[in-house]
Length: 306
Image (cartoon, rainbow, N blue to C red; front, side, top):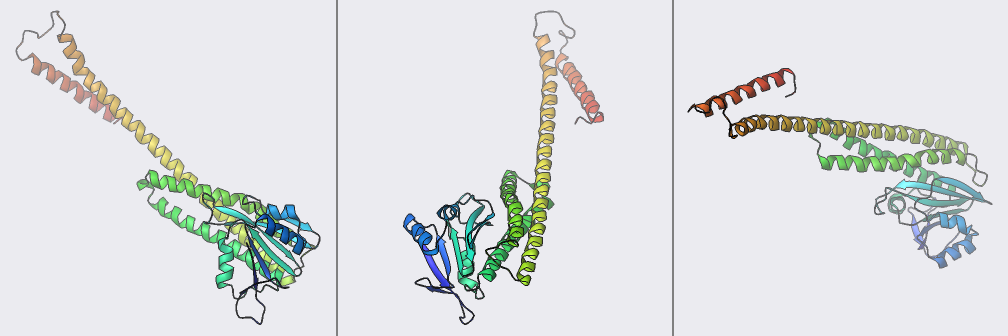
């Protein structure tokens, strides 16, 4: 699917237009082979680099081809089943802005629905707005996870298997974010050296601020991962400790049951034994067993076994 949007200073909002004109934003979502050929011919694009933009697992990077910069980015998404992030491509040059993705990501919905200041004829400004949205998306997601983790940490003794599963899923999400941060930060630094795209001084400062923000978000991500790891270790240690206590109690209980079983087994033999002719032998032997139990319990408590 190929859509064209346009907004200039004179227009109040971003509008969809039927055909491409200079200064349009070209929005490409999961194009078919015919549409890809059209894009290659119309805008003189590199076909292989265009195909890379449809790979949801593409790592953040920049490729320069002639007067165009192919900028591959990743962002958090909930629109792709079993995936926490998705890659997409921005193609930018002096008079061109094209976005290419496999799915219609939240970023594009946000631009179309609320971006009144998204000027399609100012390609560098539009690019920076996309990068800002990207940075804010990561920061917002990680803040949300941090709040949930802190809430679980306060109730760590009440965690159940479902809570631990949620923590593992959050850890998986954070690890995926973490794998994107380093190439994403390097990409921002590389943008300052692009030949195909010229940035003004204030725009360069904006990119440098984004690098600082991404590094701060990266630190928050690592902190959240460490907290989750500590909570899992605590839960695992507590579970193991409780299991050992249960096994210990069961072992002691088995030993206690064995004592009367041994005595009754001995008196079941066809041999002469003490008290076998005494009418109150059962009560005497029961008292002996009870006394052995009491002595054993006192000894185990002093040894802090139970």
